Amino acid sequence: MNKFSDQEIIDSVLKGNESDYSIIIDRYKNKAFSLLKRMLKNDFDAEEVLQDSFLKAYNSLRNFKGEAKFSTWFYKIVYNTALTKLSSKKRKIESEMSSVEDYYNLESDLDSVHIEKKDLSEFLQSIVNKLPERYAAIISMFYLNDMSIEEISEVMQISVSNVKVMLYRSRISLRDLILKNKLAGEII
Image (cartoon, rainbow, N blue to C red; front, side):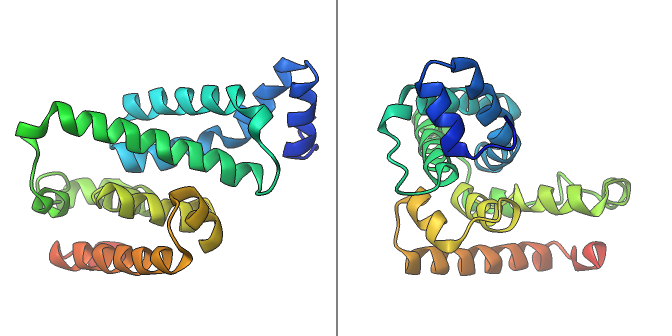
């Protein structure tokens, strides 16, 4: 059934073949988990939110109208569930919140010996993970999940022009992070 479209699989699930939902899970779990790791900065929370997202999507399958691609609809659920998790975590640790500068302090996490041991892909992912959640999410959706600006707009529930602005700011923040920590040589 892997050759079937998302809509065909959803139709099968809605007809009572609930086990076919596992195909949807297999199809989207890795990219969704990657997005969640970038937003939540924690594997455990990412796993929890991913499971919640799949459960929410399953319970809402009858509400999926097919006006957008299933992936867009699903990533919207993932993104909003992650935002809910982030806001609840921030309320719990409000007194311990770190400053924005902590996002840009790589030197304590990455020393030159550690950088040499990582491959370039892992190294770049670790830099993206240092960005604020929304910036890491938009970079992940655009570059890693190959989502269009319109799809990101729908997922994040912001205008296309705001997505473009956020993507631009995310790139600038990423560049500044690399330059501030003198990591350009490590990437090249």
